[in-house]
Length: 405
Ligand SMILES: [Zn+2]
Image (cartoon, rainbow, N blue to C red; front, side, top):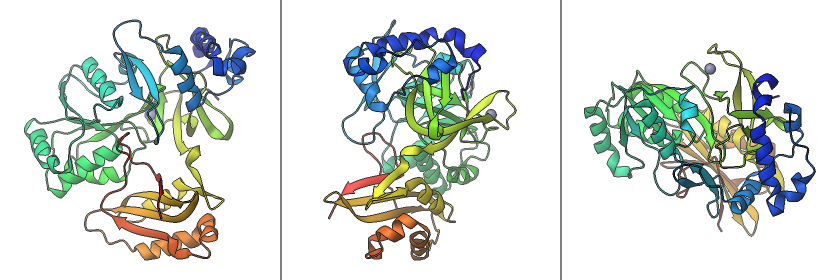
């Protein structure tokens, strides 16, 4: 199933044929694509082999694409571990196409750009490009240190800030600090987000700090750039895809993305991000099918030879009252899981019975009860004041694997 009808997509498939031709020039991929027929229909697209993250990086290393006008920007692309992989984009980051369909900001807004800048991160600059098109005021804050929140929040209040944007993990910190300090942002109406799934716990803090604020989401990656957007009237995991983005639901509900934008530098052709999803109508009433993101299919990890569904554990734990976020940490020793910890970020003042939760998860999760049959003490559930985040990407993943004793 595709996000676009044959009538809408097929006249624009010349871009996909051009991308295929570029991929055939990459020595490591030439064999795979050599005999693929040039796609003239959506069925032709579906018949092409999917492109994976490592393939895309191989292709970019060989093709070294350059923007037609202005600078070519290099950004970190995917991969939570190891050396940065690269995505390329021209100045503007394709945001005029996004702005044509989605205008969360307007000229009267005072917008705090709280996505981290630097370190080859893309989102800050993408949001800046959207602000530019919107003609609003911009306060480019980026990331701040633990002891700087109070001062910045007071400044936001003075400036009558109306909009803020960041990854949900970062937004949680801003709202949690404001709430803990009893500070309100009465003018704040718009919360833009991108980079991670929305965190429903954020709504609680938003209701206390900025009762008029509503969420406005973007879905994308540094490889595809923005694929879809939503509004406060849409569910947080449902996105209206852009006409330049051809989204396909393949086997095992895996999503793949094909660009129809002739200016796209990354060779995005049936590119799989690892996200699963489906296409369905949106209750906001906008016609056509929207993309429901169901989470990552690569969230299954091996623990002592058994597959553990990390997202299922997280979902179970985050349903617990008082738990605002959770993280699974696997400690490996000599390539084997020595222990599994579920870290709980709890709401201020919440009293969570971690031991009861531990027993429930252990008995209710086949992988864990079997893997830790002889040493159940090595499966732990414990409250923490901070989850482990990746300093390089600024993201807080559901799963952390580390080497330990
Ligand atoms: Zn909608």
